[in-house]
Length: 82
Image 1 (spheres, rainbow, N blue to C red):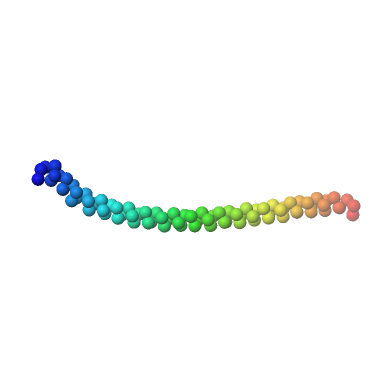
Image 2 (tube, one colour; image 1 turned 45 degrees about the vertical axis):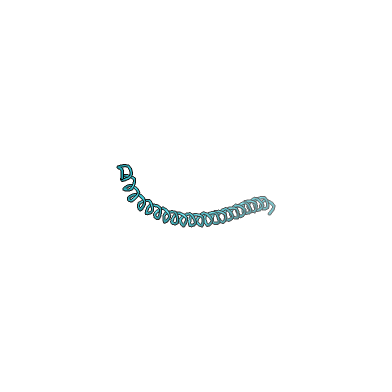
């Protein structure tokens, strides 16, 4: 065997198992990242739902406030007649 072939064999004998191990670890990391992505999607959906609920509640409070203001104006205009 020549020096080049010996070097190639040593590199293949060393690198091939290391590359397989790295590949396995990368696969495991990809699965974990996928799991985290799914959880983040769920959190995003829940946050969006809560945001919609808060906006609906604020709109309701705003309507109540407007009704109170209108009632107060009506009561104020009705008082001089009493």
